[in-house]
Image 1 (cartoon, rainbow over the protein chains, first blue to last red):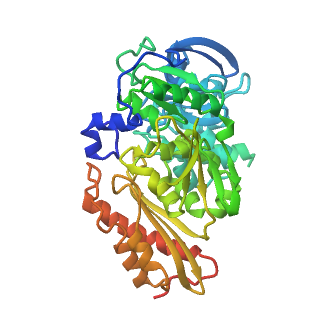
Image 2 (cartoon, chains in turn blue, green):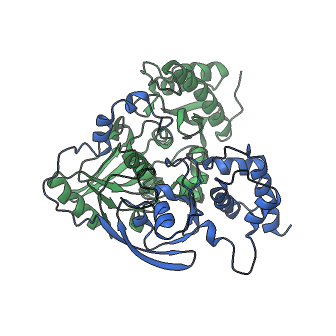
Length: 195
Length: 306
């Protein structure tokens, strides 16, 4: 099912749901009076580099990053806001870029996995810890995991194992059983604290 | 297609027009024009419920009015008579970091910690939650138990309605086509509060969630608010439980009896994750846990007595 946790009688009646979802206004268009645009100018700074691009309004941030800027380190996993493979930082805070419009990101700063390691400084401590602890197997979820762990440690520099596991609720890995991902997060926390 | 290489495989919304409102006044003006023209328009706040529905084509609005950046609708402030006003565009993440919320509304803290995940909490908003009317959202149970009200603003003025009246059914609310949810207001609440849920592990949505708010004096419950989400077509107050708790001493028997009435007369919804009877069972168990923890947190009162 595309929408786990939803009630079956919702799923079986999309027309009804659609009408509710739109404040009950199911009527057809009477002219186009809104000053709304189907193409939007997106001005965004990604990994420190400013970009200005015109894209269809419905373009999702993850597709903007991957297909327009060629930053394919950010992955598309579930497409439904659950797996976290598309996690990036928006103004320094981890978000799921499959559930943000590029238009919403206009005027803001984005950091992707490509921007985490600083030039000449080697891997970011979280990346280094994933390498050290082998916090991956196939690697598909890894960019999102690294960006999510960066946020967990930014909010709580000294997390318990339970804190890390709870913090990773929005990121799904189908290979590792999470064990080494959690170990990597705790190792990164130690390094970042200078311990 | 919005992009090239993966066209046809990725999930993205149907085409729509987008406008970013620069102020509440502009948003209300745009909304009023759209309502007058019977246009199919949606307000976009954090987008954590609306965008997934649009990607699945469960919602296909012609136009999105993006109000997400309006600072005037963001933040927690003290209102009249000890009330707390939460701007509609305040994110869950901001609420988690707000010291007043943490001190005054421990049930809210409970819910925020287990609501969705850290990335969704960074974008999702309180106003978006109540306007969306999702029967399985966490926060409505907490807000109902805390007797929250919702402030709605249009070009014609502002009205405030109890959340209990605002929520009408599955994705249905009392929001008029030209209105914006601008704030959620909470009256002062006693410290005896707790929220408990049992979640669907992929979506983190509650199969059942119960919030209990208990005021106590001299070891006796003076008033109680109990509310349930995830079980019926909308979050609801458990009035029978509330009545059974008032003026009672918090014994295990009293808590058990109140919990057993938490969904009395409710027709529980069923889906592939949980049958109606299982949801009702969860609600009772969670009500018992929430009441027990709320009573433990109630100031100056003993632990649950047998």
